[in-house]
Length: 150
Image (cartoon, rainbow, N blue to C red):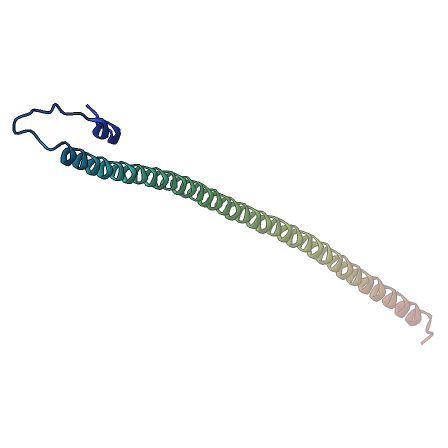
């Protein structure tokens, strides 16, 4: 049974004629108890309100902490993705550079082979020219010697 300050204030006792309680003292005591009870109820309500406020604040802080953790996780994921993309891009750049380098080397080797081939052709032509020229010189020399009436 829940007793309110109003219940205490309105409580009536039977008065016995012989050796009974002084009604004024009982009323004064009941008023004092009712006042004290009112104070305790008011304090209890304030404490409940304070607890509710603290509970709401704790829930808000927990929500903010959750949001902060999610934000941090998202940021970490983005950073990891950026690192992975940067690595892939770097690997792609290196790969493209290697391919380009291989092409340049292959072109240079083809040009070198072409130049070597042209040098060999020029040498061959030189030797052929020298042989033709020697043959021509010998031919002229024979003609000169044969035309000479010695």
